[in-house]
Image (cartoon, rainbow, N blue to C red; front, side, top):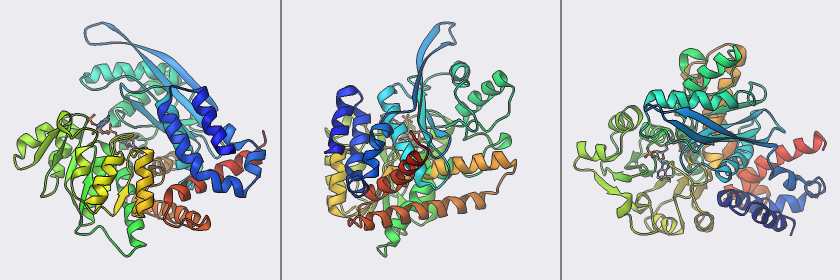
Length: 448
Ligand code: NDP
């Protein structure tokens, strides 16, 4: 009843924030057994306090485009919870960004960061600015204008943003440059920085590699592996590219990628070098990949069968949703299972709808929710902060080894918690409760 009341309250108080309702609902329903077991969480009004951010900062961002015209966007930084460390979470630049999206991402981030075992609170931010089609100079002017407000709220021990959709190395560079100009400080105030100025080796690879390590752990427990298996991946950005790279390193065959215009199915395996050239360096559409590789099948989004994502129609042993929220619905989940899929490991945040998650849990395949499976990115961001604080840089192998052991730990902790609550294969329940308990106990210990 307590949990249901809180979910109702969220829907009444914030009627337009659909993605936020969805994230809260998924988490709170799976927390119910822990709340029932430990009365203190209700006594201390932990859920009421955890669903409302510490603060929501919303600001106007004015900048000038290449034609000299004034442009106006909205900027957001939601500092959600700092019970176990400074706020930490990415910035997203995409036209779909609104306060509901940033709140869903920030809420997820609190529990995800707790799972990493590092001392990181949770936050998220971004803007409805669309970097697509903008010149480098326009992106730079936007980032500078965005930082002109953001700098007052962030700090190495306060709030440390990073990248997300639409925010990669280029944007982090412009943001950091402006922060430094305004404050005259060289602080570890952003992660995902360039290697020559405080960045960490293996940060670009971390989310994708970590997501594959997590799949490996889920499969290992059942005596299975990815070697020799066909895999499907959605997206073609940072997470998707390094998921594909790690899958190849482990002897698997990734056969798909997608973007906001369509998807490619390359039966012999995605050509990773070509994918990087088109998406990372030239920032073009995947249609260009298909032009160079005529044997590959390209399907435009407008030609997807209604209500489905064509990526999930391709038979695979393991699927890695790595594009965006709600890109895998009930129909897609049914298609995956009918085609023999045995493992879903989420690189994106909340890529599966609530109905799709229910089906995965009922089918008892290996299902790694994003909060656990994609925590490798923020974990290596935490390692970047540790390197900045000590003024040392670690080599690639050390960071990668740390990443692997953090992902193993997250799996073990989620799986043990799921067993403790009598639902051994349910890693949604396991990861949510494991992440929640650490934050909730810290809140109780720190007083009201
Ligand atoms: P990028 O911007 O690098 O790539 C995003 C990819 O998803 C692009 O291929 C983009 O297509 C595609 N995409 C975006 N929106 C849509 C849409 N509405 N429909 C179809 N395709 C879409 O972002 P990341 O790879 O960094 O992020 C991907 C996901 O992973 C997000 O959910 C993010 O929150 C999550 N994540 C990222 C982390 C990181 O370290 N970067 C850490 C943890 C989670 P196009 O090229 O056409 O724009």
